[in-house]
Length: 161
Ligand SMILES: CC(C)(COP(=O)(O)OP(=O)(O)OC[C@H]1O[C@@H](n2cnc3c(N)ncnc32)[C@H](O)[C@@H]1OP(=O)(O)O)[C@@H](O)C(=O)NCCC(=O)NCCS
Image (cartoon, rainbow, N blue to C red; front, side, top):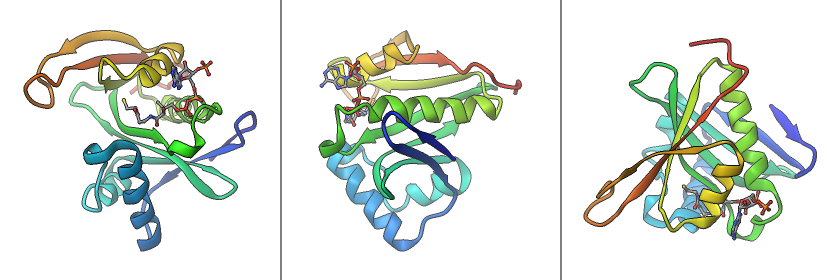
């Protein structure tokens, strides 16, 4: 779909998963996101009915993100975005985020929403440089004391949806 020359990363949208891809993505997700990782019941659903992106280097998956439509027309929500631990800090997170946002804007969506833990400096710094701004603080979002920051970025270049 797109080859991001600087990082060497190729971004692909997967619409279905073979058994090997599914087990690898479950494992990679757990390594980066722990209990919050999408499991073997969720990943195929997102691939078939939402957007499942992977970023590959030399044919090997280095990161992933899943996106689905919100009730609000034109809005999308991105979840489970990660770069595998041994590939971080080499520009791949930025390349993956920019590639995903470009793909979604070309599909005509207007806005991408994400949430992040307030203490997740890696993620919040990356989101800020990619044009995300804070919308609100969601108290107790994942249970008592588990606050999240809701962030949003415009998807420019879309054809309108
Ligand atoms: C967040 C994440 C995807 C960043 O991936 P990455 O490939 O390391 O990011 P990049 O190398 O492209 O860095 C892009 C920017 O992110 C920020 N960043 C990344 N790692 C950082 C760190 N350890 N400390 C501070 N800022 C950091 C910086 O702004 C950086 O820009 P810079 O290199 O110009 O300083 C990665 O750390 C990750 O997978 N974390 C675990 C899962 C997660 O938290 N996902 C987000 C859920 S909301």
